Image 1 (cartoon, helix red, strand yellow):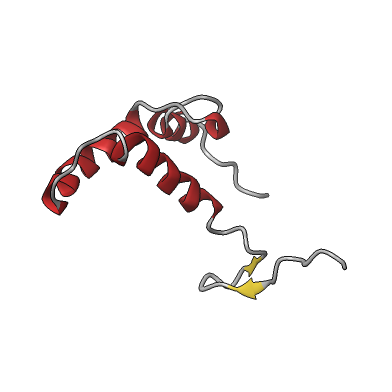
Image 2 (cartoon, one colour):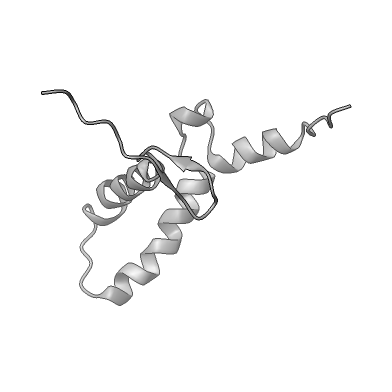
Length: 89
């Protein structure tokens, strides 16, 4: 039996998808659960709603990401914005 290939579909942005679009979001959700939810003792949904912005702030400003050269997303974007994109001739 041959392995199944990912199905290709058109997304709302009209680009060809190969079934990998959710990979980044799934990775973030895993990190959120492992680092932001499971270690905490939430009793109500309100507790979660209060903690979630703190986790996202930490995730974006302090947590280092290997895919970004071990920079935080904030530092990565600041570094990228320093170098303007050259326009084609």
